[in-house]
Image (cartoon, rainbow, N blue to C red; front, side):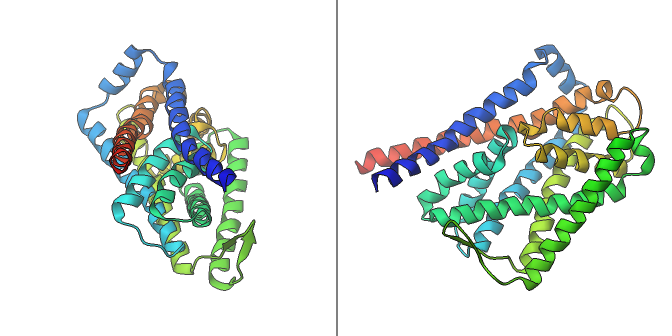
Length: 315
């Protein structure tokens, strides 16, 4: 019992550790730029575009929080809306920056959900289910992105074109298997005492749509600021973004740093893409990564302070 209690405390405190790690990772992402460069990147974008990007970012995190609602639906447990919204927002703002979403986001979720009566086994199910929500959405959007991206957008980079085609084919196979299993596979899978069952087909479709909405909203953040620097057809942009974003996440590099920029600039047509994208990418990382992390930090501090206050009153 003592060992179990100690382990639970360690896992719970890991949530705060990963929040600190996320802060450090975004500091690393932005530290290569001077304050003057950061300021110019933001000031060079019209206010209305920054507002559009902010709205898209907010909508994206609402969609991300809905992952937790679907996961609670999967384990057949109901919690008040503010609880899954709070947990989802903080969990994803941390995992988006710290990387290794299952571990970092999972530690945050354990810290919150264990307080609200969700068992350890059910939390593991929720984390696994949310991982599959993102995975099937990635499958769907990679296929969509490949179809939407015109052949000439890949330029002369045949290796990028080929690797993207292979990724799209594998994604189509993966999505087909998942939908087939949700329709016909009824056996439970037990892993280390935790019983997993396939979600119903309707829930699998919800996973795909909600996960896709999250990534589309993230794309609109970048598009809102990118359009100020370069003219690009939205369909071409969307295809390039989806492929770059998903491959960046698959790489497990925090925030897809470097991987996202490399793939995105290789796919986009035109020369000197790095220079063109410079201001837009800085603004994108600040609006979609830094600001949500700052807000979640404030919310987390207030919540933990209130919980500590409650414990003192009970004592």
